[in-house]
Length: 502
Image 1 (cartoon, rainbow, N blue to C red):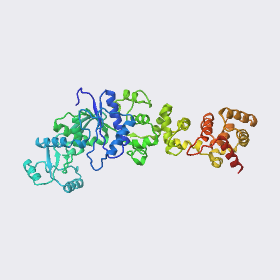
Image 2: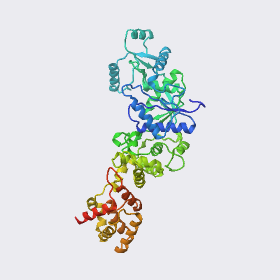
Image 3: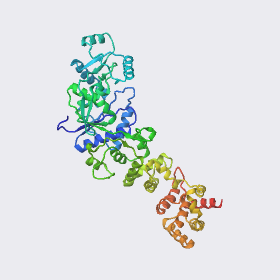
Image 4: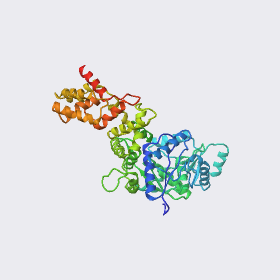
């Protein structure tokens, strides 16, 4: 067990695809634990899967971690005292340790073919036995093994599992024990010469002085094999903490069929990093002191504790993530949210690629208007439809507007408003308010009977943002050079009047 040494934890992803949300939570819990304990957080790249590992995935996963707000003290891009930080650069070290295990008779060469091993496995299953390796090469004389290898016969290297149960302590689950018969003698180096995960991860963690291994519970079955490697090499065994599985709403393991599952997906949707960090921290961790759910980064670090991580599966709740994202969008200062929101409007073709001063200022006010109404920033283009897209015929036919047009007060209000608004170009907020007071006096209407018809005339719906923000956007937008023309109040009133006549 680790003594009083400084906490050292690692996140060790494989660069074989996009960073899955389960792996990101693992990274976050490691980072929170390190920062809370004043320890060291390490990023290590596990790229021994040569066929699937790609440099572009490594670049993206590092960018995704930085975007989320995580930083690391050691890693492939920043270096550190225990290099290298990519497994592909450590092959000589792995071979050296394997040779030592062979020499000490703690490992042995296995000449069994893949076909022979498969026949063994099928027979064991047929006879209702545990499908484990029989150990037939364990008793080979080392001199005989050397002779066969010298003759060119392919051989893997297997670790000798000791004749006693393998135990380890899990901070989340308590003491765990595996029978040695269940573990069997695992391969640590394939006949191709490529070392396997359960072997190299131990060498890496030992070399880097890792004190706590925090990872997903899909690794629990790997842990006894790794503990056996630690013990065979006489290395200190770290503390383990296995995090619960993340499930979809159907309580199946979270996958692409449930929607977004990678950091890249959430970035593209317009989820803010602090919202995703806050939400992921609550997946399988229970903060102390009630049912509080808003945790900025500094407070997460202060509150986090591995002892409060639950072994029960965590269900990914998209609605809760959206609720948190709305909170953080509303809390974001304009200088941050304006360019973020504008970028989504640009991608949708609603803003020019290059924003000059006037357009940039107008776009910022548009984002201010719409952002409080979205769960994620990629909804902004659709929300912007109230400013950009005007279809009076559709508004008149919309079922949600039926109640408005069923009122006998609606037509008089629309006519009175149109009579006063048409000569005004541009229409100021002050003049608009004066017109509404005049329409109120003339028609004897107030409240929703007054405002709903006018809102339908201007945006096609009876509910929406405040007029004092909406009117200036329409008027100023109609005078700007935008990819999609924004119609002024006067243009809208004229088109609505024609649609009513039709």
